[in-house]
Structures are given as C-alpha cells and as structure tokens.
Length: 101
Image (cartoon, rainbow, N blue to C red; front, top):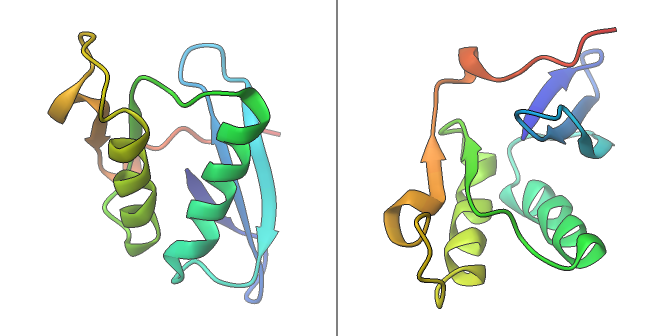
C-alpha cells in the first residue's frame, strides 16, 4: 500500500502483490493522512476478490493502521501458518516496491 506523489495536490495509491507484481488497486487521492482512505481501498479489494491476503505488509504510516486492524479482523478465525501476529508485517517505506514505468 504505497502512496506516490503525483504532484503537490494528489497522490497515487497502489497495492501490488509482492511476487507476481499484479496491481490489486490503483487510486488517486488528495490525502494520505486519512486512514479511512486506504482502508476503503483495502475493503473494496477484499470484496472484489472475495477474500483477504494471508499476510499484509505496509509501512508504519498513519494511513495503514486501519488496514492492519481490518486484516486482523478478517483473519481472526484462521489457524494457518500466517495466523496471529504473522498476518501483518510492518516494513520500512524505503523497502516498498516501486511500480516502474
């Protein structure tokens, strides 16, 4: 879940799968300070594909806190190898994958 500054007024939010690099969503927004914005993109994607990822990785930006909470709720009854604390992983924003032109 990575915001990219489009110009000083808009950000492009996208989420891509780590290994396949499939883009799961791409949206333009005017803020990256509202956790409801990113959470809404996440929920819309979960509805569209009919499930949530086993593990979600994001940086510690304020916009990702609600997505972390939602991931924990969506997978609260799971008992696979990514259940519990392993279902969400924080990482440095500098390690976010960049979508290249």
